Image 1 (tube, rainbow, N blue to C red):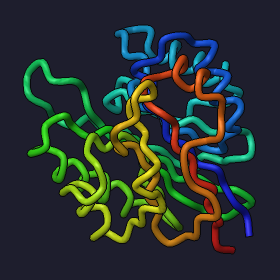
Image 2 (image 1 turned 180 degrees about the horizontal axis):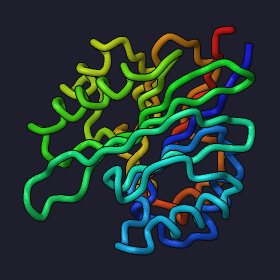
Image 3 (image 1 turned 135 degrees about the horizontal axis):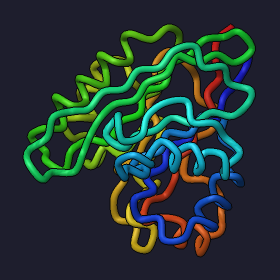
Image 4 (image 1 turned 90 degrees about the vertical axis):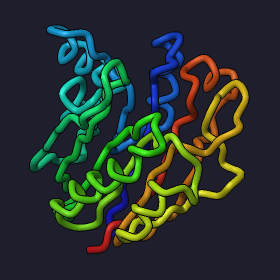
Amino acid sequence: MPSVRVVTYNIAGARLRSPLGDVVRAVVPDVLVVNETPKLPLVWRWQCARLAAEWGLTRAAGGRDAGSNMICVSPRVRVLATSVRRLSQPLLAPRRGIVSAQCAVDDVQFGVVGVHLSLSGGRRPAEAQQAVLAADALRGPVVVCGDLNEPPGRPAWRVLHAAGFVDFGTDGELTFSSTNPVKRIDAVLVRDAAVSSYGVPDADAELLRAASDHYPVQAVIDLPD
């Protein structure tokens, strides 16, 4: 039974690239979903690919074309197909979108969906439903990862739960902010697979604070043969 380590990380508050890289490399993800990637026109693809390379990973899909959400993978993960889309937002609101990838490890397929939900609570349930639709297009177990911008029990989480996605976190695993953790808004939710480990990585607190204003969240997922 193969397993994969999936990590979600909002890097918008990244203060220094060196600590950010140290955190990612220490976690050793097989799949990394990144929120708030570089989005400067014309050069964003190069910047996203460069970041992934610094982490020892490869950019599989996403960036500006997916509302600044990106999926990166390690060499052991094969990417079979990808999809990106922007989610419409009010004028001057931050960009939002969805990135997805059909992946395989040891010939066992699984899907990954990355999303960063809106700051507007009224928009988040419909955006979560769009993430579900992206997940339904993938084969095998699927994870939906990202910054949901609301705590568990709120409407967007309920949409994901109703679609079969399970939250393996606990209320004590706060993810924002790294300098004063008061909310659990970042998550890896899993459908049709077991999880053997879940939570904020055990890393130096000063390093995590220097890397980003969000904590990363990791899940070790046991894929069925």
